Length: 102
Image 1: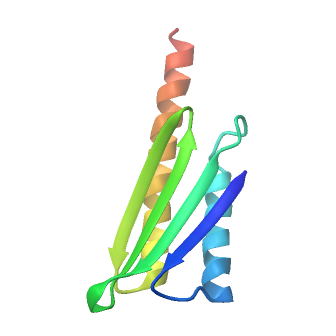
Image 2: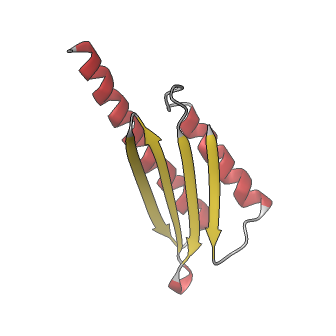
Image 3: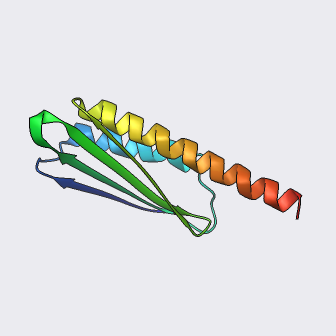
């Protein structure tokens, strides 16, 4: 799996990178193994001290996106990860149901 972290408007510290890496590891647990999905995380700082996290992954030939804006960067990352996790599970359930019913 290829993982990418992009940051705009601020430097990524080791602690932030570790938090993003841990979040991606959590997502890997629910992602299908084949074909190997690609996860991209974009972090940016917006006006008024708000942080924006964007998650993107391609699964089952579908691009899934999730994002969140918060005044706390870590909360924004956690919320974006949770939203993307729900989308991945919904898509997996859809494909598993489709396989069972032809």
